[in-house]
Length: 361
Image 1 (spheres, helix red, strand yellow):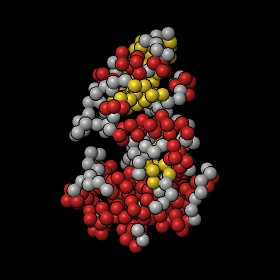
Image 2 (cartoon, rainbow, N blue to C red; image 1 turned 180 degrees about the vertical axis):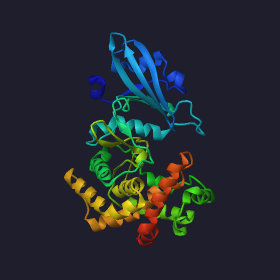
Image 3 (cartoon, rainbow, N blue to C red; image 1 turned 120 degrees about the horizontal axis):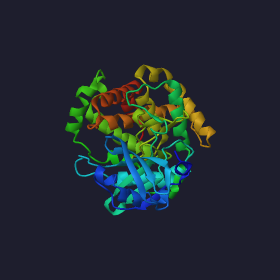
Image 4 (cartoon, rainbow, N blue to C red; image 1 turned 90 degrees about the vertical axis):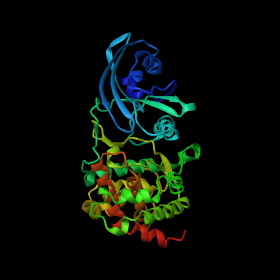
């Protein structure tokens, strides 16, 4: 990887956003959007090395420019290309991820993907991310079904602590939403459809007490009201194992920042711990790991609450992640099933619904 790419500060380029893979790999379009990187040099060659299909496609490219034929830029384009999403794709969620890389990531002390160029068409709420090809650089992206161990989880909690102590950034960026408030106040699915999903194959052996859509929706509203009165910080918002990676140097970090939001730290920590660890491991080690997180917050300049308060907050917050996987419909079923069962087991184990019902809101 050329040193210039590794140190290049995020730059926004305004251009038409392609809708297809063919258009995104066109030399003329790449020449336009990569000008901050190349100095405006002509694109000499474009080699497509891989296409990873997901909600947004990730297109791995090897690009050379006239004037430096011996230097290959290994890039990854992330965008909605040749998608089949209903009602289009992109929107404010996409622009928030763009603004994360442009305005937030450069100020964080945590491990995040390197995104040197963000191509935006803000009037149409569309963008393409031009990122370092981290796979070429030796980065390992965790499969959501890949087991985490306690030491790995301690390190990812350290990364979350580094994010959460950056709460002063919220004062400068009022575009960052309180997502749980919006989710709790919007009917994304009808209660009947949500109940169907919760009772499909994903339910596994979860107890009936946590398989009620009515209780889940009520618990989410109660959690949102509680959250509104708590100290707010930056949150990743979707910190399940499939959004974690390990660099060639061994550092763990988080990718996929489209759900960046503000809220209480426990929403991230409860979601993360319950989703990355098998149920028996979580039950045995979650208190120890929560203490590690609190110590990391203090170490990195934040103000951590006492453990007893944090433990109560952590137990209450399990509902947030559980809801995310109750409504999931477009992810590989084994991943959905594992996440839903782990998070549902955490809701049952901690009596989250009961705690929220007892809270004075």
